Length: 100
Image 1: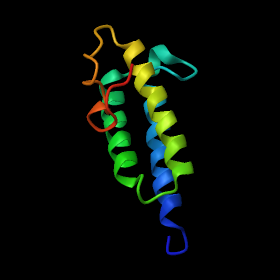
Image 2 (image 1 turned 90 degrees about the vertical axis):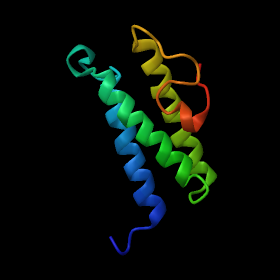
Image 3 (image 1 turned 30 degrees about the horizontal axis):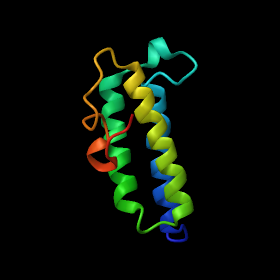
Image 4 (image 1 turned 120 degrees about the vertical axis):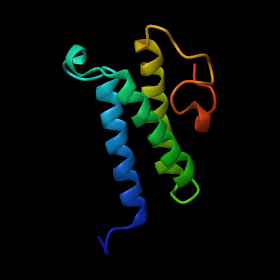
């Protein structure tokens, strides 16, 4: 780990959270057996917090692509929800602002 740059560790952690959130919102091969919106909410909140906190420390190129992925899972969460959260109160929106 001593030789790995911090930006690589941060982006790797973010990609893992992003991938897990995508599966939990139903963007996987078998969405009906893997969808779990409660778990997805937790993962998206953690991802949003990480990206928001890390953005000043990593390059704009890395932060931008992570934000794009985050927005995608936030929108997928909103679409998958039977009773959508009010705008601005969905997962991660505390850190990202409203997503619609």
